[in-house]
Every structure is written in structure tokens, then in C-alpha cells.
Length: 260
Ligand code: FES
Image (spheres, rainbow, N blue to C red):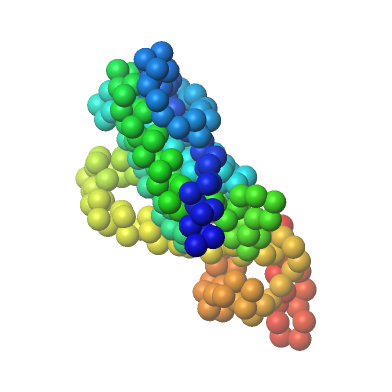
């Protein structure tokens, strides 16, 4: 009952990344047309929805924002031609990462044109309503969930990793254009590859963060992160080959790893 009361009285803090040419103009039109919608969303204007780096979205959640909205021009209307296709790819990846920690329904991507002032009011109202139903973010307030915060930090580092940036940046080229051997990777095959990379990079960046605090053995990492030691070993060796971790010392027969 008390929880229900909290949800009703809770006013979410939302952040919106709006593309300059469509959605920001749509928000402006909503304003000059005196369209009523809840004032919960603070807006950051970006030149294109494709410019919204996944890191921005994760960082907002890390800071305790209850929900993040990315808005751009309708498909086919992007002023930089395919910026909103890029936004979709970045957003999908971000959402998959956030599904590991149950925060994926706190982000949303939508298209609002410069003439859709009414629609802008409607979609913002709906987002506010949906986030209210979810309740405050576990990362908001004076006592954010520290365990979750650590996982979200790992996600922020993972989305910015070279591997994820390369995969997202080249997805369209890989799946739509033939390579020098005349091969094209089917969309479904690429999705499987992407899902695998997302899981691996999430675990690897959790390992890196755990090693930032102090050096540890594979077994200790496995216990701390609730991961199978064989998977931890595999990831740790990959991180070593990337020069992100190294052996610190060997105790008995057990190698102790540290973050570089
Ligand atoms: S300019 Fe609006 S989505 Fe690219």
C-alpha cells in the first residue's frame, strides 16, 4: 500500500536527447502551441539522434535519472540521411546491455517531427506515466543501490569499448554490403554475434572493475561476480591479450591478476 502511495506521489526525473531538426522543433511547437504535458523531462539538444552516444544514456542512469528518452526525425527524414538508423543500432545495443540489470524499460527511442507538437506532448506524457508506474530508479536518491551501480558502471565502460563501437559502427556495412570476397553477413547471423559480444563485454568489464579495487585470483573473481571460473579464466586471458590486465604475482600455483 505504502509502495503504491510512493509511486503515485513520485515525480520522475527524465532526460530527453532531442535532435535539433525535428524533435527539438516539435518540442518547441508544443511549447508555443501551449500544449499541456508533464514538466518532468529536461532536454538536451543534439544535432542528430545518431549523435547520442550510448555512454550518455548510461551515465544519465548512473546519476540517478529515472528515464532517458532519445528522439529524432522519422525514418527517411534525418537531415544527415542515416543518422536515425545509427540511433536505432546504438539504442538496441544499449537496451540489451541494460536488460542484464533490469533497467532496459527506463530508456525509449521515438521519432517526432517538427510539425508534431501534439504528438510530442503525448509521447512525453506516456513516458512519464510509464516511468511513474515503474517507480523511482534504484540508482536515484541518497542511497543508490551500490551493487547495481557497479554493474551499470561496467556497462558504461563496455558500451564505449573498441569492440562494441566497431560492431555498432559497421553493422549496416557488414549486413547490407558485400565484402571484398562478395560475402554479406545475414542480419540474423550478425544479431547472434552481437548478442554474444554484448554478454562477453559485460562480463569482461565487470572483471576489470573488480580488479580495479584490488588484485584477485580467477576463483575469487568467480565468487565475487557469480560467474563460472572457466568463463572468468577465458575472459581474463582475453583481457590480458588486450593488455588490460596482467599477472601481479603467483601464490602457490594460483596466478593473481591486476588491472593495468
Ligand atoms: S537530424 Fe534528426 S535524426 Fe538525424
